[in-house]
Length: 142
Image 1 (tube, rainbow, N blue to C red):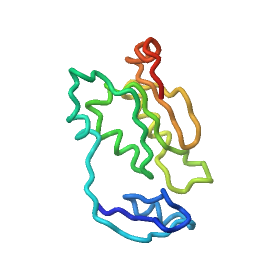
Image 2 (image 1 turned 45 degrees about the horizontal axis):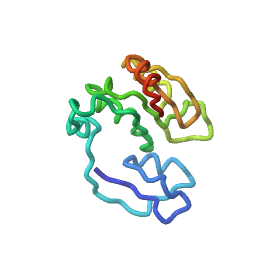
Image 3 (image 1 turned 90 degrees about the vertical axis):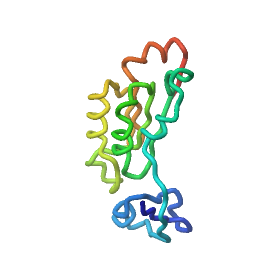
Image 4 (image 1 turned 135 degrees about the vertical axis):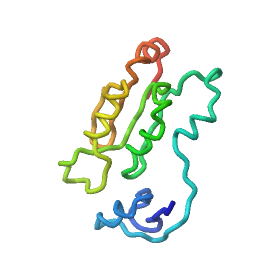
């Protein structure tokens, strides 16, 4: 896929696979475009020996507006993750012009048996309802 870099600007860390994410922010500037290989979370999960590692403790997703796509890509393995931390913002958050829609992510996660337990703009934390007891008994952390 095309990767739009902002390296060398005041927005280091704001590069994205989404050109619109950069173009819609007056403080961001594309300084280079690169072809990069991309793999889905599903492909990563397919490499895990689930007999040896029966669950993943926590996944943090902060990928400049592609968070929901990443979550959807791992749907068949999502029940094996205890915690997710996802960057997202409400549509009415005027401080952010490029975001993953928090309401869509909350709904997707709820539909997939995850409970939102901490909500801050840019950092939504979810726990797998089926693994909540395991998390408490094993003192797992997000």
